[in-house]
Image 1 (tube, rainbow, N blue to C red):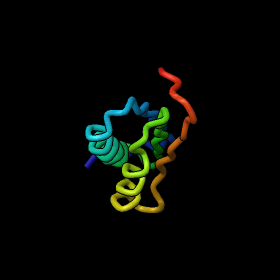
Image 2 (cartoon, helix red, strand yellow):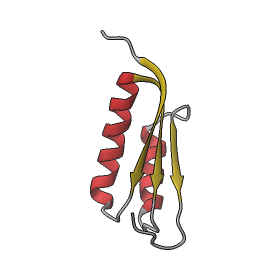
Image 3 (tube, rainbow, N blue to C red):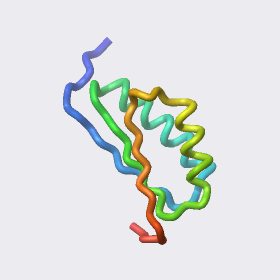
Amino acid sequence: MSKKESAFVSAVVYSSGNSEQLLPFVIDLFGEMKKHFVNCEIVLVDNCNPNMDIIKNTLTSKISANDSITIVHMSEVQGL
């Protein structure tokens, strides 16, 4: 097995409202990051996505409390 990188890596994911694809993408991305890096985080920008509570609850149940996924709530649509 290869050695994990010790650098801290952050991935910023922009939610454009496609909730059914967002959840599996974030879970897969986090799994890949944990394979290759000792320390990593995902910052999920919700861009006023109305389904973010469902995604947040599902992520909480699938990912350990020690893992870092932060959801940044935007009060209005900002775009890229």
